[in-house]
Image 1: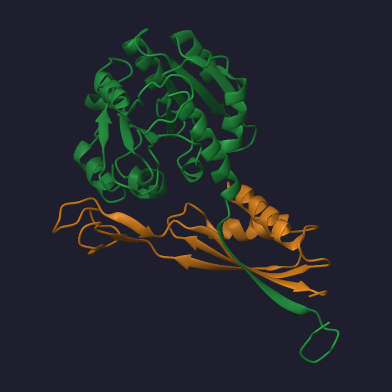
Image 2: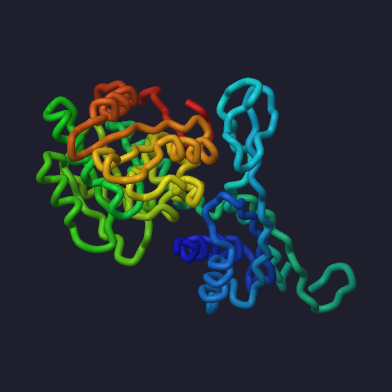
Length: 115
Length: 246
């Protein structure tokens, strides 16, 4: 449900970038979404398709790169598998998530006629 | 005009951003965090399913601490002010944030509530989030710690079904433990599930009804209270929530 609020923030951010380029048209948005970011990808896509209308992102394509979660021991860097107890078998320290919860706007591909 | 060949085709400009999409919320959360720190306030983001017992736990907390610790709260709810009314009745200075159709609180809503809040002399401030195990986990509100209420009536596999909520928790309160004799609830199973989604899983068993476990919960809060500073000076208890192990 909060995918709509994420899309609203995304479009606002893109608009701020586009303000620097007169007559800009957004072609593509590249975002990175971790599998454990709490974002449902289908909902995100639907929200984007709905909310991009009549904004700077109208007609733009949303490209999503997903990131699988990885946990590692902060002492010895051994990785802990998803689904396993999140504690290093060797060091007994709690594992730390090193990736997998990202919600990032990586890149905008914009058409800027006056560049 | 294209500078390479002189044609009139517009150029595609790639703009690297590499920023969190929720960076506006992050910035507002930082502001809230400074506000809490300036008042030497321990701010707790209390989350859980609808009916997990968040409000009841807060009522039991108020009963246990009496006038020893000054409690404040804002209660997020889609409709009604019933949670805040209950909390005010229990001695917790409370205000409502009516979210309408929003399924979570965000830093902006909390900021607004803080500005309207009737008291600046609280010790511990609870942000009672909307009952929801999905959306609230994603929004930093400026809290010092995330506490998730999970009731024994919800099933042992809840942490596996909602990993994002539990991976971001600093503490899980297992609520309504007075009901365990009436259920087939397997505490070891929930501990196992939690250990697979929450590094350094910490869980306290509580009953708002009988008061069991509430003292340990209060101790947990007291351990995290910042030093009181005179005025709004800097203090050094910065409980930043990332994936750090504390």
